[in-house]
Length: 358
Image 1 (cartoon, rainbow, N blue to C red):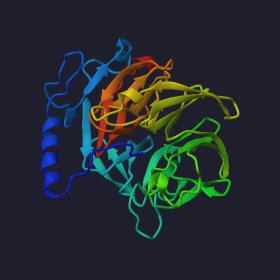
Image 2 (spheres, rainbow, N blue to C red):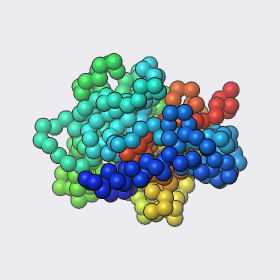
Image 3 (tube, helix red, strand yellow):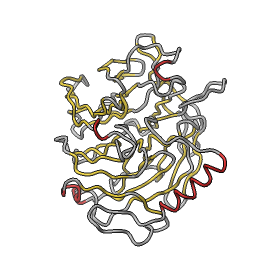
Image 4 (cartoon, rainbow, N blue to C red):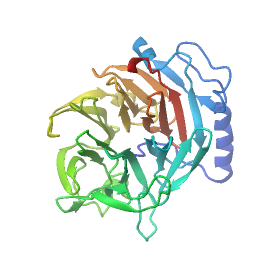
């Protein structure tokens, strides 16, 4: 979801702003432990810093680690997924109604268009796909803002075509607002969030059919269960043992991550605030709680004010990957050796330690 980003510049102004930003990105990355990178990391510019709030963060991100800028020039990047069978990431550019792919050594290319709005009448706004994930059978599942549904891609990754099967598009006969992020448990149940960001006029859109923003479970296609409502549900994730459901709330007046107890049937209880960062929201910390992924150790890598927050299962922040941009989402590769981040019009990467996996 695009919860906050700088106003885009146009014409010559945008050109000069891009040159100025590029010169900043090419500077060595600052580190809170006083070490700096003297050169860009390999072929990539570096940016930002690792804010080490707790020494335990060093178990995940080594002291010499830098934030790499892999590519730029998009509109608003979101929802990355790692396609292990192909060896590359795919990610959404929501306003451009396009999914792009990025692979080491190859760079980026347009992978699928349209990705989230398949209508024939042109429309503005956040119409494309947002959150992407793989179902238990390895098929790509998309939260489609423009089509207001969660759908499955019915085409091979080697030849991605915009053919989709609807998994869920309404609750009790009323169309969803704009499904945003999605996760599956090991039994194949799907959980997703439904804020209003894909509607052209957001909360005031005349086509809004539900008077709330929901968190849902789908046991089988079309069988939709409302789990809870919050003001701006966004990112969603499960703990490794699937006993806890995490939901980001991208509301500047209540910028929190919620945690729910989850039973064996997929029902939630005991909603609690996992971490409140409302007081961190501001121009110096662009972004709000948004997409997140859970490390096998149970630690959350959750986008929020300033970048990606690293939070242990007790709700204690260990560090922040400060990208310098409103950071929408993130994902790991298969080996959990890197974290791929979508940040405004950039894609970025940071190396992750793997010692805890052995």
